[in-house]
Image 1 (tube, each protein chain N blue to C red):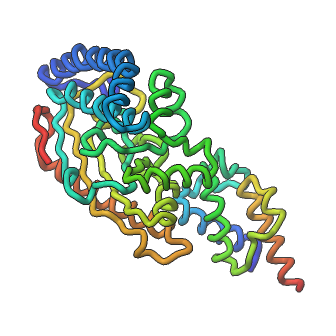
Image 2: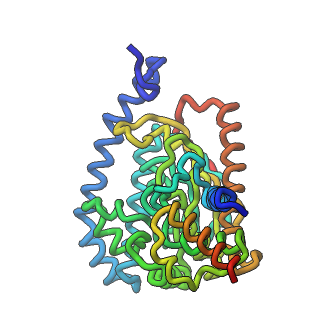
Image 3: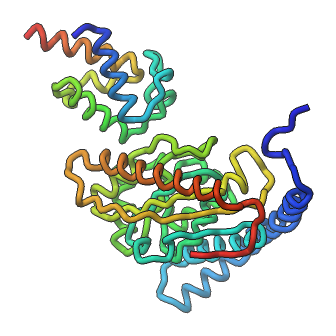
Length: 276
Length: 86
């Protein structure tokens, strides 16, 4: 009998860590989510009364805190390596474009030190009824259901208020870790608004939770911010196509360098270390 | 330019622009459902075809009827014939 790759366990320590992460982190995550949903209305009212933030800003801030809580729960099992994340180059207003490997990617992006981030996503995440109200309140944009004019108008508003937009330009999680084709939305928005693009390269989240698997596995996760791309340096009218190709090439190169680093380093034993 | 050369040029142009797989370039392939193009891609598709064949197609009414890759092949072949008879 041949076991699938994902459940071939070689060492007892690996088995123990997998058991531990699924018996502790997974229930804690569910509890953290339930607590967050339960406390949200009260926190919204308190923060609205105590600050000048609007509901959208408060929701984005609380989602960021929720993401940070998620990361704290996972930290004993996942070794995060952050490269260039806390530098000025990632500071909004900007358009983040990240490769997509796992459901876990979106939580990992709480490592960004900025909370004012709206996400441009397809329709299906809005079908998660436990998250959908918060996504609506945070002003996340359903790129599949909006016309381009409506979408770009809303996105430009986020950027003009000093916020950031996050895209997964592949549209789907990659099954083999390789970058898939890029859709044009992020790059067209950059060309129209002149706002910089910050490419984010993610590695390792598909070890933690790949598409099609429901249990977690400890791993090393690396998130690297590449140098921003200035859309104003590209000639119109088809600048978005050139930006898209350039950003994708940058990410391919960076991801392959990250793969080489991973191959050369020992990533088997996770440690609760977070560097940047 | 033969019809086959036109089809090959369309297919290679779209493969390159939208990173499509050669084996997916079947005439019956639906642009949205099978090739997974979106509405922004359709605008780029028009630009790519105009650049490849050096004629304007964005004002053509019949472009609204295009659903499949085969529709694009027929549209461009007919357009080329139409231009050649002028």
